[in-house]
Image 1: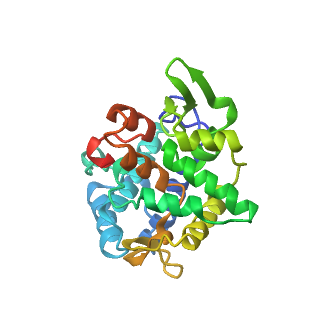
Image 2: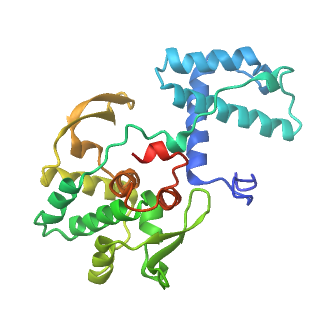
Length: 277
């Protein structure tokens, strides 16, 4: 994987791309049993059967099934580049493009009243105080996950002619962006930026904070079932859905019509204005 050209034009696949291919391997291994399909067996008809299996047997959403099928196409193209024989009709295999980056219409957001509850919550645990800072920063910078916890460092805060900005390169797309430092972000900068923490642990702390702050409005949303390991959509208290990912959409929602739309889209990485509302 370290030799494969990535979307940035450099060599080496990202952690998330590797994760996708590992997931594809698990799915395809299950699909082909008891067969042992070769690359040349992956005809247009076989691709369609694989897609149908993902939808009908595994009950994946169309976007997930399409993503796995197109990942399999990428594997076949790579095999062809290494002079492995492919099916004669492979180039006729086509799936609708899935805009996964903007596929967050059901993402839960925090309202200003939710944020105020979180800010007013009395905390003594240092880890939770730290996690709260990250959550507030996520909501007022539009960053999430690893980009949030590794890019929002003191060195990236710059004084410009337009005021204090955060200058970073986003992990997804490697785009350089300039984020306006809003009052809540500035307050955290002045009181001390939070220390780094893994996204997995941070998300657990965030849910604890939101539960304690009574961010518990009943919301319809997806959550992974611990037994089946599949997303199940049903009504649950809101805190169940809150994590670092919440910041991106919350930032867009809170600041729509307050900050120029092109700037919001650049900060959050949205490609369609409709997904900001």
